[in-house]
Length: 193
Image 1 (tube, helix red, strand yellow):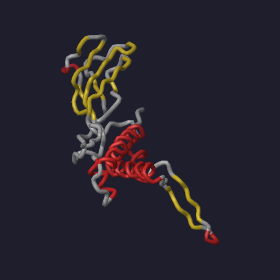
Image 2: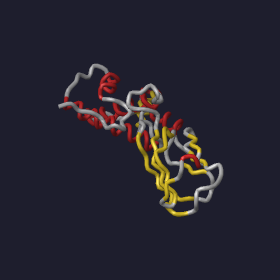
Image 3: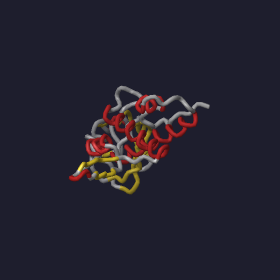
Image 4: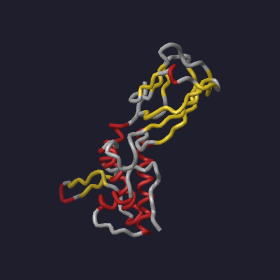
């Protein structure tokens, strides 16, 4: 029985196996590797508030009476539809700023209301394994998937540092995440003004 990862997973089982080195194909291990890949991908997206693997998103937003409508995820790949107060908005009425994740209405504004705007769009950097996925994010996903696997399979913990003190004392500092994940969380964390 072939085991696969979720469509939204950043890395494949084969990629994790290669990253870990010398791990043979084994359906029992592959099921655990798939869970680790899925968990690592979800954790990175939660830490950064971003979508990396492209997929469809539906945002229900409150209208503020302003020309800019900020979508929850970026980069925007394409916009399928936008409705305002239940009516479909002509795509010619707004401009998509894919990088910023913004829909701008140059000659008007989005009406004021609670949950009166619905945008359906695709966001992300590409499919699993695509060259367009950020390399540092993919590496962090591989590191985190390996750490999760090691913890589940062997009971190993992630160490942030090991310090050799005077008289041969050793101090171990555990970290929640591997260093590459900490860097990605700092670098890619989504912030909006």
